[in-house]
Amino acid sequence: MRIATEGDPDELRNLIRRARVVLWDFDGPICRLFARHSAEGVARDLVSWLEGRGLHGVLTGAERESLDPHVILRAVGHRYPGSDLAVELEERLTQEELRAAATALPTAYADPLIRTWTAVGARLAVASNNSPRVIRQYLTGRDLLPCFSPHVYGRTGDLQLLKPDPHCLNRALNAMGTAPSDALMIGDTPTDCLAAKEAGVPFLGYARSDPAVTSLRAAGAEVVLPSLEPLLELLRR
Image 1 (cartoon, helix red, strand yellow):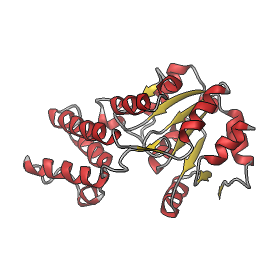
Image 2 (image 1 turned 180 degrees about the vertical axis):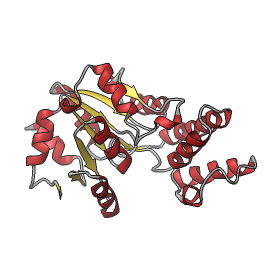
Image 3 (image 1 turned 90 degrees about the vertical axis):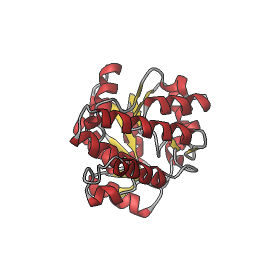
């Protein structure tokens, strides 16, 4: 296993050459959704909300301390599928994501990469655990929605289908009439990698830190980039 760099473009070139459809995770590869609106703070608020309803035992200690809103949402979705509790918790997280989208920061090189990939004929989709309302709001603000529309596949009301379940990837592939081997998934978390593996889609990891690289490696990612710049340079050539 190796980390692809600008000086080691072969793996990237092979991934790009095969990809007719590019599936993007949203928070991470496209933008830093919680750049100025702490995800950890949102997670704590969700935990406090659950505890305020007398649901102290809904989460395990590890889930409570994860400080990842999606870990909390997934846990409640698994234990109370289709319940009013799950619906209300999901809407609370959506509202927090909508607030975060107003101050989200674009990932370096993501905007020109998206536009360039579209210009050279690839079809793009978003396959994400974030709310589709949030994704569309952000992409509209960056004038990027036409590069993806109508293929935005965020979380649904069935919280058991959050990644690592490949549901959102399969929805994209089916809607676009694309075989998994003709697609490429760009993601920054182990759940992205596991979902891509389950769907049979080649995976490209994006990691801005050494711990993130380690996590992606452990999940099975074979190619990991610390920046999207090498992708953009290869496409421009």
